[in-house]
Length: 280
Ligand SMILES: NC(=O)c1ccc[n+]([C@@H]2O[C@H](COP(=O)([O-])OP(=O)(O)OC[C@H]3O[C@@H](n4cnc5c(N)ncnc54)[C@H](OP(=O)(O)O)[C@@H]3O)[C@@H](O)[C@H]2O)c1
Image (cartoon, rainbow, N blue to C red; front, side, top):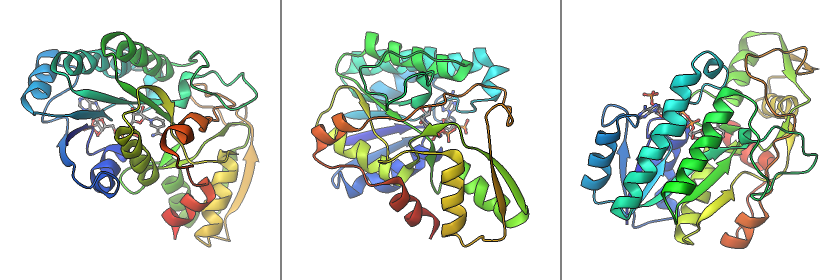
């Protein structure tokens, strides 16, 4: 199997390139970065996808700066929605199976329980809207594609919340972290394996893939600091109202993994266990 990965130097793309052969041992990974082709260039996308003799393309290329997107909404939309449409069209016309990565932020957080794949998206910010419309592009242009919704990623290959907390924990004596947003923290190495398992099972449509269990950003930060034995940090829970950000974020973005478990037969491991492996 020849498996292309866009955004191959990003947080998730790098983890896929490193880990996917653990679950798809025979696959040849073909990494693409922005200098190979810019996904907003429709002709370049079609040329690259048709010329690479791929069986599967995992689209990890994205505009991922949630707050900055409020000031660069057009650019976020061009990459996450319009360019996703180019990739979906190119995969459909060449018979390449598309696996597109989407986000828990397509939801507004008003639901009290975890979100399932059947819940309708209701995005509340520029990044979120661009991701929700990217899903629509894939669903309308590429039948048989797989959209994987994931959340709260951390890992070895790029900036992320857990790495920032550990870094700040070493330098700052005091941290304020939001405790009224609840979600599904997910280790990119685990997500890479989950993506491989879904490809192996030929999954289509929308599937949530995250580590199991839920917590707040505050809980996640406390656990990471404890695991790293950074005991001297004074960490305080604060509300979203106290910790203002440019983009509003959902108060609840827990993702239900029942469908993933039914498809793969492999329940995702708990976020605490995954975090321990990452930190220690
Ligand atoms: N991070 C999270 O917590 C999170 C949560 C849920 C879902 N997701 C989704 O997971 C996917 C991967 O996210 P990530 O965290 O790995 O993001 P990331 O680290 O920012 O990686 C995205 C990659 O896309 C590349 N890229 C950006 N614009 C491009 C363009 N026009 N053409 C080609 N490549 C381009 C970037 O390259 P340059 O750096 O060279 O621009 C970067 O390597 C995204 O779809 C994101 O929405 C992320």
